[in-house]
Length: 492
Image (cartoon, rainbow, N blue to C red; front, side, top):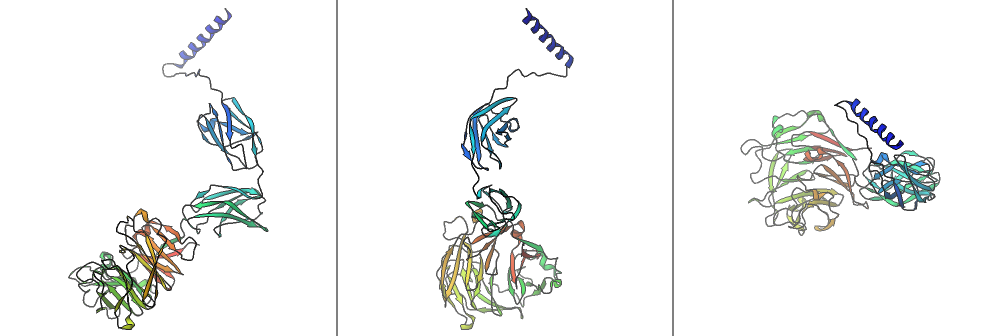
């Protein structure tokens, strides 16, 4: 009888509550009990601070904040949560204890202790284990020096914080794209990590700085369609393709020593040779040479251009069959050129020896047009190229050396990221013994003396718009098809 009376009171109470809410309000009462969580195990059974532990069981909450997880009395930070598994990282300072879990006042406790292993002297672990330059990495261990120096690949990193058991640092930008061990030193101590940190992107090592718009003494520069370029006697030359088929022909000169003068537009003496189409240039001593680059009836033709008289003079053509010039460069006082037509051999031209062409080395690629060449001392870095007619990507790089007139070619490690597809030509330059190739929005450095020869210098949309580069002294200039000039410099 007493039980029936209690049920009647409960029903009346609920009815009163529902009535008082009105038509616009509802009361939802969850009569489903919260299931009691259970911990059936965890892996691994032991580990140092930094170890990721997976707790298994059932009735866990998939909403991370609902899981009050502890190791002994110390609350853990739950990283992931499913109904049957939770993960956490063992923090510095944790001690051996059972793992407990509270969800809505219902508790589960592990049967066994998780054993916190002692931290060995030196570097015990670090996290994360990979990332781009600029990533903050946390090293855990013991007996670290009070003022530690951290290096990655021999490059000093910025230390953000440090104590005897933990160091935080950022991955330096001027390391390389590969795996490196972490070295901590100072106070007579020197520790090296057993594992390696993987650098996924080297970040930005350089930048382009806009030079104020130069004064232009001709409006033609605003419609100048690309052209070719070279450096002659400390000045930048740009042009030498047809602005119009019947009108006057211009080239432009910029003197970095007199930037206020801007681009100086100058008429060619006469017109471009009718058979000169999209030429490739090379400077030998005080002379400039142009070779025909398109496959026309004028295969292999070459001209000497005099910047003083602005006139062209024919020189001996390359004897190769269907030689449409793909690249040209100067090395050891001689002119070298490789065709992109049927005959892909490299030929050499010696102005001091009668001005005749001879073959230096047989063909070693399938297609070289839009590639670049950088001469470093007595070797030329050439590419990227298609090696065979079945290649999908223009990525192959070569080193050309010469003994007398006889050349030799060595294949180099392929240009990184070439599988993305090279959409435009590849401006290239040399600086302080290293070669630089601009591929789409990226600039890559090649250092033949380095264990990992390729290093990403920068990734910037501006790189893709720069069509020409020139080095005057140790200053690198780049400009686009509208004549906007930039100066390149390294950061730090």
